[in-house]
Length: 443
Ligand SMILES: [Fe+2]
Image 1 (tube, rainbow, N blue to C red):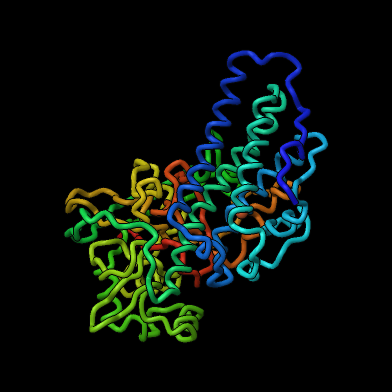
Image 2 (image 1 turned 45 degrees about the vertical axis):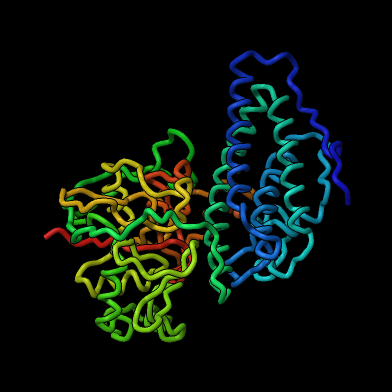
């Protein structure tokens, strides 16, 4: 099948010449759209075609699939709906690159994505270019009424793309980690040196009723609402995430072989999976090494510990005489924090230690670096209803057997995270940049 510039016909043209502000709005949307799409491409810089197709476990998707799936999202939910007479260039992509939207039709098996050698990487890039062009045309010709309809879906598609940017990074890390050559995704900034981050301190918060959830200004996913009041009992929250050095103390105190610290399901998982350290850690000649996106290097004890499951986070907290925060405690505490941090735009692709020893009593690294496991099950807020149709499948149907994580990571976009953002994973998952912040009941 060939590329066809006229396969889709944009008929939703403005009936009259748009006023200046309308053009500006469309231009801003188009600019934002192309910026996000270009950033995805930039994350692929340096990858070879062979890298794009490997699926190292069912949770991991090949890079090529991420590129095509995010494109399918814009084609399915915008072009097919708003471009009259739109004909997809390759209708079979609807089956191949649908992820989990049952209302959008049948889909290819997730665990078999790595067996797909066609379309080629080059064809996947061409598919992106073609859909980008159609979206650009649509925005350029849309009147106000149409823009009102397109904008929420386009913004959703942009945030969806940012989620896949993070997965692209964590997935290629898992792919590279299988390779005994330990490929380098990005060279490390060699100016980074190990720091003395100082001891964890605990910041106290009094009991209060707080407004939880998104306030409706700007974009948010449906699972961040409805905003509601929740009683948060007095608690203390650690000033920073747990470091590798602190985590090594847990390991050396036989943390992985003492069942008293573990949830029953966690203990079963540790033994079945034979875990004895975070994912990507290797012990050589008595020292812990860590596979990073900059290759294999000695564990830096000052960096936040990452690639731990909920089970490990919970066991560590028990060992440390603490617990994990609830998501409401975390959100209450985050209200006082600025959203600065180590994000994917900083291109470290790894959590960083605090740059200077901190002695003041405040919270650090709440955003960026590592997602922080909470002890809250991922469940609907009071009054939550998923919207009808395919996009109602985005979040609601996953509200079972998962835990909420907060704050974003070094693979999250700065423009993607919010204090109310609820990420979620099953308790045994470790391939995301997941870490630990301790909490305690207020004494
Ligand atoms: Fe997706």
